[in-house]
Image (cartoon, rainbow, N blue to C red; front, side, top):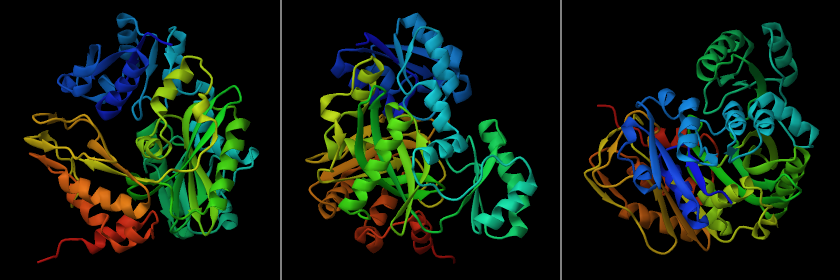
Length: 451
């Protein structure tokens, strides 16, 4: 096992990794920008290093500064968390070249599954269903020809993208070329590559993802699915496990497909396979080669520590015996992402937290980095906390979540807590009638009246 790990991240995920390190008897090194000098992960780490000014490009995305911090502090490995450099294969390679261990999949796997086109190809070869689509589009003529076979509507996607950038929905030929130009420009600005491809657009799917863990030596664990259909601009806000849409037979089929895929690419470490689900059919969308924000939901229904397992796998240990096989969920878990934002306009709301009360009690978990007096900086993601509840069934979990949200108090800044309170009381949410456009309908229903 490692003696010392550097955490190349901030916020709640940095604290999450620190806790896993402590339980393994491993020292944790925090890095931080000037804006995060008083952050909780800095206070709780065994050692901390300032790596630059507030802008992420000068600190949390500055690879030489992060690797230098690891070398100076005697760290043996780097945990990237999620976001920032977590799926950057170049960072993983540089980490390894400097004699450090990257806590994640091998760089070649990150490249294979990080590129949307190469990932689609790999999944087809592994027998995983995908939506009709194209490879890399080199010319506009290719696109015009392809839509004749795929049909409308289609979606343009950035090959290196994510988070909704470089994605455009097209419903007729007249808009195709103009939207291609916009998508390519967004992809170039967001990811440094203008490569795009086409895929058939599913009008009202569910977004279902599967948590996988493997050791690259034949050990593979499929830990069940999460329902992630509640999202705004392709950013998830509520996740739960299991999905109410799947019966046992469908769940078993999906788990078997994912296990076959992970063995086909010889995956190693923790990852998530994401699918669109429509009318009983699953279509592979992408794979995240890192820990997910919502990994906590799976932890609650399996009783397994995913971050600790990440570290053990990176240290060369085989998959733990407790992770063997496919898992049936125990009870039901729901997570709400609590953000510092205007609850109507969804614009960021940085500032000082003047008062704070975190919910607690049986079956309630809060992963957060905030405290009373903490100043939320304007430079980073607006996530303040993850509120996760677990109960014997979905109905009980919703009731527990309702109670926990009532206890959650954040003053001094705006948050989306009231938004979550309204959302979980919506009849369609309670009934499990979900799809990726749920929030569009919900926002329309809850729009403020025009005078």
